[in-house]
Length: 180
Image 1: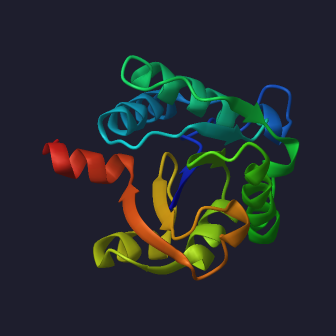
Image 2: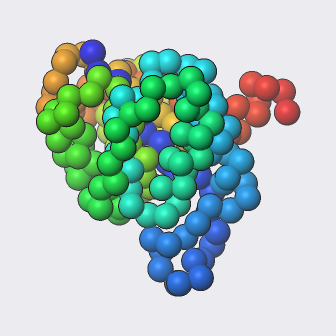
Image 3: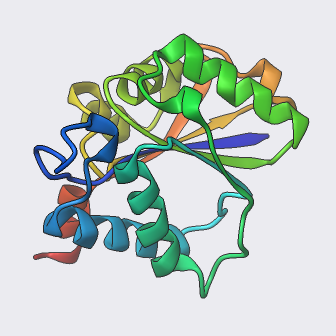
């Protein structure tokens, strides 16, 4: 069995000082949300044993803050910053996932961007928890995490409509759970 975690970057500033989209940084809410989500991941195994991150500043910061919140409970996974994740469509993201067969992680996390991540999540969903499917249907919000399981032991077998959505978490849902 393979587990795939799709994490959208946290909330960002509207414009980067450089004017380049890739340089946009997390805003205060993004810093808070990324840390909270990382804490949630650290309390809910299994943990990623490989992480692939977009090279955009906001994706890097999201991973760094999430990792900081979970590192005392989670073995450190290898992390790779992949240019092809920035601006990728679902087919390109699926190819990056299939390329993970080289290192063969059991639990893989991608940290990236909409619309590609949300479209990929919708395309991968073949079954799963009804509440998670309903929550994911409208959007993969900033700091949103969609967790899929796939039968089989090869990332090359991951395909559209073959994923089982086993979890969906967002800052809004975490606040509802905690009663804030």
